[in-house]
Length: 163
Image (cartoon, rainbow, N blue to C red; front, side, top):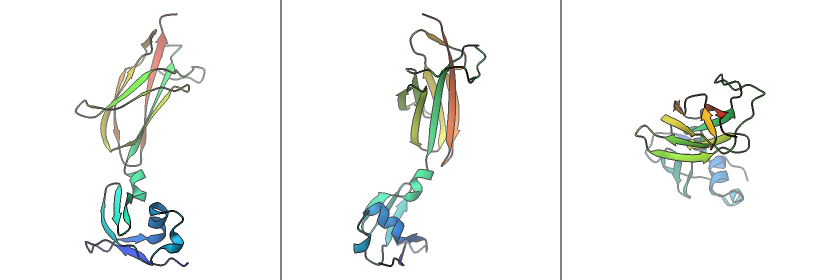
């Protein structure tokens, strides 16, 4: 089947949507049964409503960002992660919005990493809570700003104080 049809926004703005892309999202494997046109009824951040249903927009992945947090054992207590310093599992990382509301909480994995995906653009505070027996060599609060499609890092150094 040759796919040549393009949809258009119902508001008449003339935007074009490639049918093959929509079909791959709407119903993979149904492309052979597809009509030769799909009309986009409305489009808003992250969603496209078509004559065949509402689905995530292919552009939605670039309309959000990612926060990547890393916690490491700062052996030399200089606040910088050195290659010889291991990453620290078991720290709790919390992301809060501008109003101080928690939007997510994760424990760092065995690589000392905590990821927060599909974060809307804006300004956030990332807070690290030390695992038992550790103190911080860096600030436990970092303010970051995210733009669409961006990945932003927040890094925290900890020192072992109890053995």
